[in-house]
Length: 116
Length: 112
Image (cartoon, rainbow over all chains, first blue to last red; front, side, top):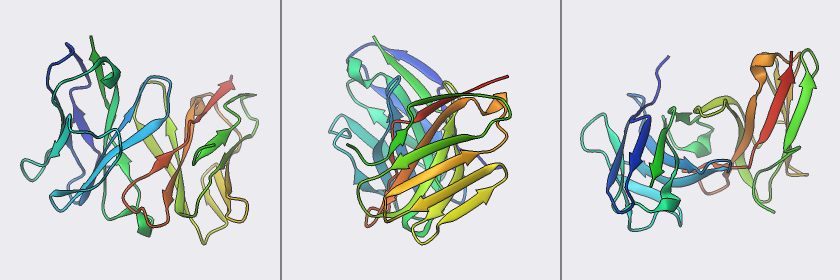
């Protein structure tokens, strides 16, 4: 079964450093997402991306965050200057079409980011 | 309260028993989805129910949706120890077709 893959699975970074989290969505999917989950809390939407541009973003997704689809297969999340509160599990996801027509989002296993 | 609130927050049952988890939401939805998350792992899609549907089945899972009460329930029948996980409901709000809004989740423990 096709799956969303994420790297790295775990990263420890110093506060203020830049981090890039990488994702390979399912190959025929057109919509891409990033979510995060702080330990013990609920999963929060960060951003959705379609046709090479951001469709929607949350208040969490401020100027420190950016997304990019640098080639035909990868989808990345960059955090420019990490803060302690950025420590969380970051999930990449993809879907074949937009969610309003009942499409399923498929999630990756997550990248656990620890900022020290 | 928030969009997508599950209850109970934690549920502990014996293997073989049925587990019922509830989710309530505040605003009009396009569809509602249930996910499972094993500790420290990714989110696994279980089942999707559209706003014009009232009940769906998938194996040992049964989901109902009552749009008049803005609530959904997930029933797992004949539970197994392997069902131990956190369960989340997530909604696609009407007009917000590009994101899921998750609840806080229910921790289910199935004792062998």
